[in-house]
Length: 117
Ligand SMILES: [Cu+2]
Image (cartoon, protein in one colour):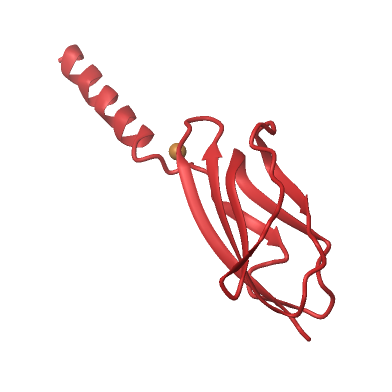
């Protein structure tokens, strides 16, 4: 009986651990998703629900990629800010890939914002 109870507890624990419900998700950003800006933003900030590292960050405008320098060796954090070059009017997509600090799970997402001409 005890052995069975332990098995069930172990299985329950395994089910909680994977699939993991706690990997890094984007909680908020600046510019925010769907933001319509009058002034070009000078910074891009990503806020995650848990400590993570940013592995890939792409800023796209009409199929063109605007390079953003990211430090792949930066310490895991809930929040990352990047300086942006001067951005023209248009619609921008941010694509990110993050690696959760606690379990190494990779999550991806994207959002868009626009700058009025
Ligand atoms: Cu995870």
